[in-house]
Length: 518
Image (cartoon, rainbow, N blue to C red; front, side, top):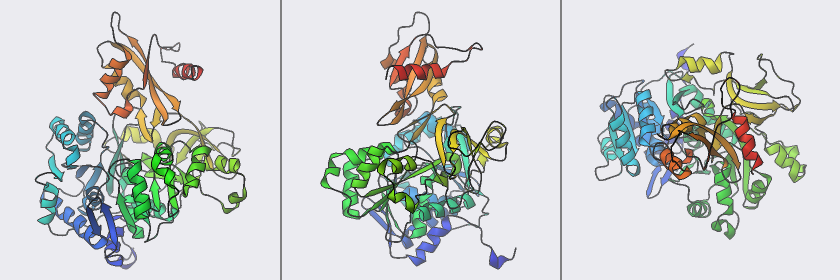
């Protein structure tokens, strides 16, 4: 291929372009901090120079632990500009979980916000290799000092290089590092900006964690449009409504549980948003009641489907103009579907056990399968797990669904034992192992109970050792001391666990028992 007709695709090119096309336009607002696009590019490229000065080499990993902030946005550009690989970490995780990610990824440095300093330092202390600590904020503000002493810097990359590693617990409870490429993130960022119809006067409120699938690649997609990144460090419905009314928010992304909080808080009573807000949501489909409430607040909701392995949303419930004339019940039914491939994706399939497509009748169930440029490169240092989900040439999602005659996919069940609570994935086996680490516990099983607010909540069934005296509060406290609070069971039942003839725990029996006492 001739040199004048090819440039490697990398999402950092969106910020590079914005630095001259939208030079003086506001790029990011983070509390008292505000930067133009020219400044955001300069700071990000100087972060790349600072990392190079620390000896970070191409392909080495740099972790980040921070709330939605200017610094985390800069890391999404500066780390790959240095040729390094970004490892964004969940701010809700405990030091032991963070240390496991640092160890598995082999991260050479950790950029962390001062508000998470105790967890960051504890995690590094537990890690079996040297990790350079770079604090953002605080008395010394290592981060600003590094930027002040660095020159702008960027290395050439191959579009197939690993850009970032996003960790998901999956069903094993062990961290799996999902590798994203520069090319995949570039295309997914374009898809997000295009599908949400983002423009230069758009204002994107960061209600979605930037650490989650690199913020569904909006970390780069917003910059592609030249829009404003409006940072929100924590979910606070009063603050969300203040920003909506004072800053003219036009876009945001959130799980249905967060949207429910926004729609039903006291601040919502002041009336609808002054500008129409495009809202993207994933996980459980929003209920007709929630959709109606959001519509009254001038919020238009689009349902998406994806997973960490697909850079976030790989399918979109593409709204057809003709559907506007349908009654509300039919519209809600259509909105609940996971949809079709986004604009850069390949058409999804629903497969039977023989890797054949199930009939597109809206009734026959199969496993949803994906492939394309916005599907992961694989799991970091885990070829066995990569082969297990891709041996058919398609990514087997573990989600069960149907294919409608229209070509729209609808999720019907989850094949994996993953609990989705408030938009967060919880691996049941991880919670089970944590419960079983209690000295009084013989064995445990964790399943999901449907929940109106959270979508699902974890419920534990526990068999105690003979003579052990342990109550539910002790089990819950034991879990919360070791892993993120949101993973802890909301209730605990004690007794013998039902099992199959081969000794496997019959989780369907446990789920049925919860349905019976609803």
